[in-house]
Length: 90
Image (cartoon, rainbow, N blue to C red; front, top):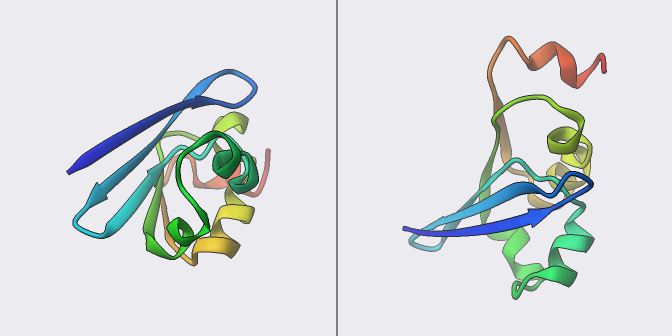
């Protein structure tokens, strides 16, 4: 497993990308996919390799770009059920 850390976003929140074999898993996407590409060494092919996106909590800096990530990756999202309501009712 390889772990990449990206201190991005309005609060410099840590966004993580894990790789296991050729699959990737994103944790707390704190910036848009466009900004991620501009600030990382990855190219657009990474989007098709992301299998799941994990949200540790529903603060705005972790969930604001979820819709964009979902459209590009078609990855499944995971969040604790107590934070689920925050995604539709900020």
